Length: 457
Ligand code: ADP
Ligand code: G6P
Image 1 (cartoon, rainbow, N blue to C red):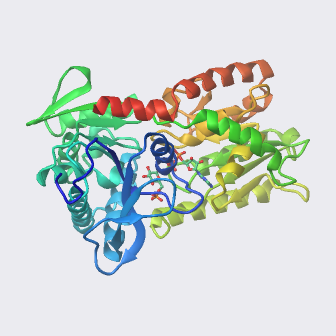
Image 2: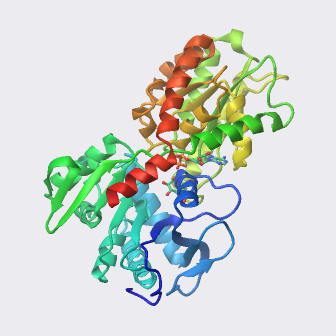
Image 3: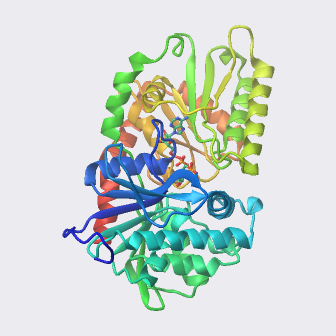
């Protein structure tokens, strides 16, 4: 082997991501999907521990609790600031979601990002074996393959991006746009959530880095050849359906009311999710339809995320303000139109809530996939299913065109879609649900991981 751990003969699957699961209520698509994958395929999951230390770690440590093997390292406070909050979440995250207005470009952020990735590569080279397959996840760790290769690793390495990928004009907002392309080219397979993102990545590689596009999604950059393709991430739909069936009867009293329809929204409180537009659309709907007052409410469940970053503090204020405004305008003593809940909810409760709801509003301004859309559909009662209202900018829209597709910037259109959904005849709801469920059952999370790993070889 490259390192001290010389015993493993068969190639293992090594999944690597910044965030690894800890605590009972994971929120965030990456951890939820990888959890299902590793449960099924086995393998080791390696990432940051969530602990902040004074002196940086030089070796990975085992995390012993939990259902599968995990290893982790700690960050220092400065790394947390510059690598995680800085380059990952105030440069790459907004950039990849088309929000160049939110970019905070500082040399310190980039230096720390590279440094953490280099240090991580050094620790990894000690535990990986030549036969292992390395699967790196998400924007925090794009340069990892390059640094591992510089240390001599010859393993097959794949990268999967859970977010969207920007077009060349947007990527050019980054002073080191060309580096990002070179980092990507060090993987054998670069997986994107949608065709949209795969096309954008190929355009960046060719237009910014001067790579040559070959047949079949292959791209040649200098010595390196990599394949860029879409692998839409998914959920274990079967399992989630069962969970919802079982949980609907365990919802706390008062959640379901006989004369009241329920609309649900579930998103980390992120500015990419379009929650303000959603609240405005619901307000617009209520001002158009007095006959629906007291007969419909919106529950929006939004756990805080990346707190301390200004753009996240702002979105929290804006959404609190807007929900207050809609409630102020329409509420009466028996009814508040919006319930805005700022905490994570156990997965079981979410499943029950989805099934209890007649409508889900999944209206991100930009999203890699959006698993909430899939969870909502999987949770429905096929005899009397609810309606999914889905943004055209969620990666999920490529696969789920039987939802009511909306433009999240068009508040009036979304208000109309709410009315359409509330009035939709049972037959139409069933037809749409059946078509959507078909996709979810055939293209589930194990289809996703098998597809990617087969491409990786
Ligand atoms: P993202 O990865 O950007 O957070 P996704 O919709 O792809 O968006 O994935 C979000 C995941 O986190 C889903 O599995 C969802 O159920 C979960 N989640 C979101 N909000 C909550 C919450 N309040 N409580 C528990 N889980 C949540
Ligand atoms: C998205 C990202 C993940 C991230 C998750 C939660 O799903 O693609 O990489 O783990 O959000 O965000 P956090 O910053 O808490 O890890």
